Length: 476
Ligand code: 6PG
Image (cartoon, rainbow, N blue to C red; front, side):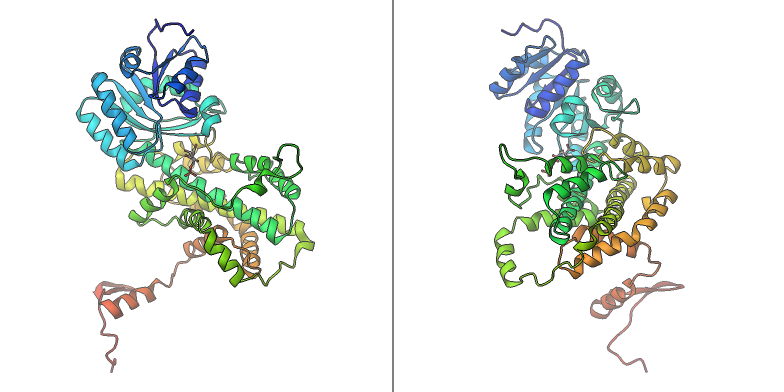
């Protein structure tokens, strides 16, 4: 039987799913006394059954709140949406002004904005905090992106810094910025996550259907990539997925998994937010769209019979050369995914006055989170060198590396197109780049067309003002 909680706890958690329970255990490991609440009593029992002296589970919210030291700090790890509001309402009845509420879920930043304003008016300190790293991260050290009440952050900082992952001895948590900044940053993190996952799955497609490689060979390639400049958490788990065999068999579990990807929506939110800001992040957009297309299995199955593949990749006799080019292509597109995400953060900072520091964001993404990678060191260095850097492509080191990888991505995209292998994210990375480096885009024609059919006017080179032409009238 679990002992009564006689000491007062330093931290409370609402939502004792795996993430919540793991995070509490992480906090307890650091010597803090903590409490957990869930309305599902089986989860409370599981927490108490851990039999740890400094973790106390409650199924009564009053008792739970009473067990906390003042100012009371309660973190919510519950599904995003209405539930967060319901739990906050409950909490307000039992907490006191000056107490701290942290929403650690993947809430939409506009909800966080609303909750922050509302709670501030009521005298409560609110922090919207992105938490990344999955279940294992929560247990052993996540990356955390808190935003909102700065004073409250200072109060809880010692705990967060201890439970975070550490890179070169520094914690992967930092105050991101005002109001909903933490959840905005986490949303963009997830957008980048979507793009990287899409790129890895296209790589799999090229290796499997383009270069006709078997799973063992694919495993070896990801293993090798993970030892070089592509080192990252996502490549590392992909390597392991290509080694995971079904119990007692020689076949991969992966081969049995349906090719229909699910999504909770944070990638889509990133695209929506970017569109609202007129800021292009096409590599994230395409990743969201391709997850959606994957769900149309019936249509794809029908189309597969209507449009059978008539092309065969001819070059599998020169696989090593193609794999080297693919590594270059992947590097190029990966840089683009991070660059587009950082560009969105730059723009959002202007629009929402978050007071973001892009170098700090790159710094805390280097460990603990899903998009942690070797390349984040370069991003961190780029923004540390120039905190006002408008786009990562303009950094000199990135520029050199991108230029060196350009022949690789051109080869991957053109070969894939010629041979009917879909590489939408690689292709978008390349086209985005080719337009980005264009002093002249063909947008003058779009302006002419808009004016032609809708009198929307156009601007002229070297001349002030807006102009309209009666295009159908002869000029002489
Ligand atoms: C993280 C992840 C996590 C996210 C999952 C699932 O940083 O730990 O981003 O927060 O919920 O990756 O996301 P989807 O269901 O949208 O793929």
